[in-house]
Image (cartoon, rainbow, N blue to C red; front, side, top):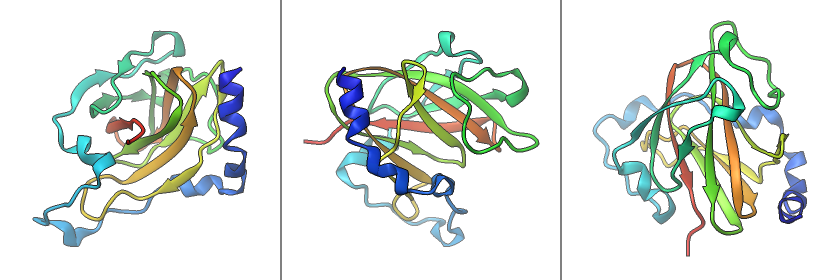
Length: 175
């Protein structure tokens, strides 16, 4: 029931349009600019571990919250997702599933360096996000999507990515 409570706390996300998940292009004026990281995103600067996303939900490899992962996705035609994303997949896009475990209830963020649709799935159902935003200027973070999560294990579906690899950081609550 704790997951149901977490889901209930994010109902206001229904007001956020689905297109808000897709972020805009990188700023070309950022070449050589040093980034001042907010405390919650400092993990982005760590070396990303390589992860091969699963093509079925049952085989999802784990990510470690707080550690960036360079996730290799598969061509969408070879991937079965637990839930269908609300945005139709493009002509030549990539997808895959990974998993992560959160030890305590709280606000978690998913940060990506590229355009992809994010679904956090629990018990075969997508969870509603609480906000969508861009990463800090010149950080390499294209988008950040927030979720209110209860302790437990979740699947992270990545879909509609124009690139076969994408860097992902699951950001645990701060404090």
